[in-house]
Amino acid sequence: MTSRRFFSAGVKVAASASLNGPDPNGLFVGDGEHIVAIALEGQPAPKGGNYHGVFSEPITLNDRGDVAFSVRLAGGVGGHGIFRGDGSRTTAIALAGTLAPGTTGMFNSFGDMKLGEDGRVAFIATLTPGVGGVDSTNSKGIWIGASDRDLQLVVRTGDVVGGMVLTNLPLGLGQLDMNGPEIAWIGTFPARVTAVVLSRIDADHDEGHDR
Image (cartoon, rainbow, N blue to C red):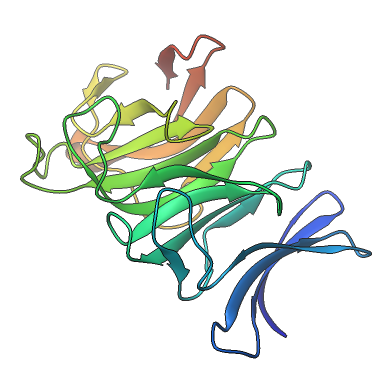
């Protein structure tokens, strides 16, 4: 086994690795004594299809040993998804080609993400242009949920935040952070104004933005 990437939380470490065999990629978490396989290439994924290709960034984990990861799929709905697993159970968080909650559009691709201690995953995603009224002004957003059944939209381009219209969300890594019910994210507004925004998601899953 050859390790590619390490991601740590507390005493636990997640690692993407290449293996010998017909399906050479895997994702693992360990604490220095025990190693658990979270997902293996070729393994069936929740909601259909099989994991395919490298388990690469973004990968994030919490102190409970849960790991959230983004991976391509062979078969399935849209060829890409976000999942959370602990080695014994894996949950689908979001799948390309499925309805994006809070919109009439469909998930197209995924960017940065963070995993909370409560198991909820916050992530940036793009929507498929031309479907459900999606165009260049409203094609990006941030969602949060513990599974694809309870996902909620946090913010979307075209929304008014702090009196200004959100025009863009960056898709690179390091653009999103999460601490309990609070999500910090970077947005672009008219006149190329860039701001760090704090969205508070309360226990009832209502949304709010402070800038």
